[in-house]
Length: 309
Image (cartoon, rainbow, N blue to C red; front, top):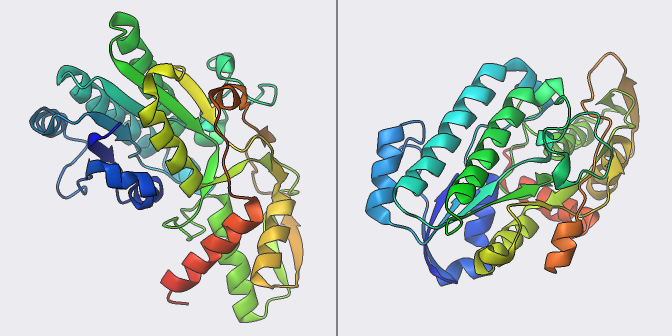
């Protein structure tokens, strides 16, 4: 498939990886900045989509952050993400755009759900409190896509649910970043300062699944070419996880820091485990190609090239 692609969140990590992908050359990608199009403005979004008449919309915009940011700003994570999701999805629907790829998050799954997390577990239990606002907003958007298809199956509004992501264009400030970029920043700083220890929140035994962001971009373009045949909801992940301690150890190995780790057991760690069931993805015939260590190596190289440190 090719044509005009309206990409929200084009300046974010996912959006920039989408634009860097080789398959982007087949598309006329329209990715307005927040200054050019305020996604919080319903009328402006509706007018933009109606005027552009894209062949496909990929919705990756939103307010994102790690556990610290989600706990500090639950109102913004809920309100901004619901508003943006509603404006883009309904703007597309009302303009008659038939193909829409919505990006969800594995934080939508119940905190006590059995791992691996299959798509049919959605809304079967309480959410993780530390990122509940963001999760509710993501559930709202995917349900809206499902309701649109229920009313009119000609609208191919599908949701991909990526596991945790990392890679080029990520945010590395531990105050706002997700786990892996925060680890890269912390271990890099420790190496520069000659610090013998780096702090880990909790006991480090919680497990997470991380995928290199360029692999998600690959899945998005594959989905664009085959949107009629993918399920309404589909996890996109690597299908295996690692402990927080493992991530710290791998980053330390890549960076070349040889200190030790200290655990702060007073700090929250979030869900004990969050591993995607990738059965639907496997049946579809796609798998990510970048190993954890290779992805961390590439991400650290990007960090060194763009950091002022």
